[in-house]
Length: 240
Image (cartoon, rainbow, N blue to C red; front, side, top):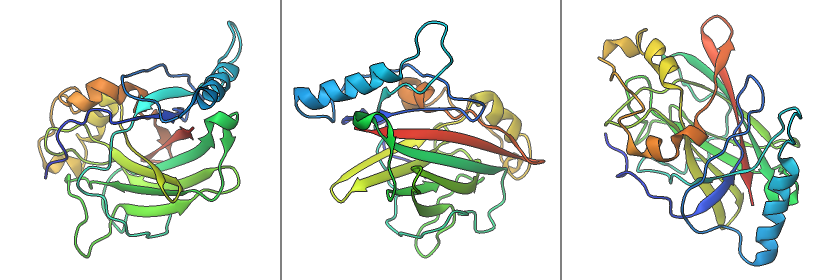
């Protein structure tokens, strides 16, 4: 299976990336038009970003970062399958993914009641299609703007960096679709184990993908061990 051709950013969306070992400020920028319209909206977003930027010597705090939207790709299905555990018995290294949605222009205020869709490939690089629904699900953010998905580390396919798709739908006519990636050393370790080892893994799972080289570093998770064999990671999505 193949994803869309390497995507150029169609618009810019505000994302705030954090690692599960602690919040880490990420710096990334790319060309594209701002989602905010009007100078007032731009000033509010800039003020929020500046207010969240740590001063020299201060402890790390969230900082709003502009990163490109990656799009949905060809495998998105609007199933509205509300659930936290999306594995449906699919084998793979367990991953607990905590996502939080915040409104950057309102001082990074958490947003409640926002749907987040998640979809990805299984360990063999296959997506559920037709009547299947494995590794797909939707959650609604709680009062803290947070949802938790229980899934697995995805396999690779079609020369693309392994990734997890997500879509945030804060309003009826507004959505943000993007992808989350994994550190390459971690992927190489995981892909040497079953069930991933049933195939010959690429030597450089991320580096061969032009999309990862373009905007992957700002969207790469920082998983930490969770339990005996799994991992946990966090990502905070900030919208304008």
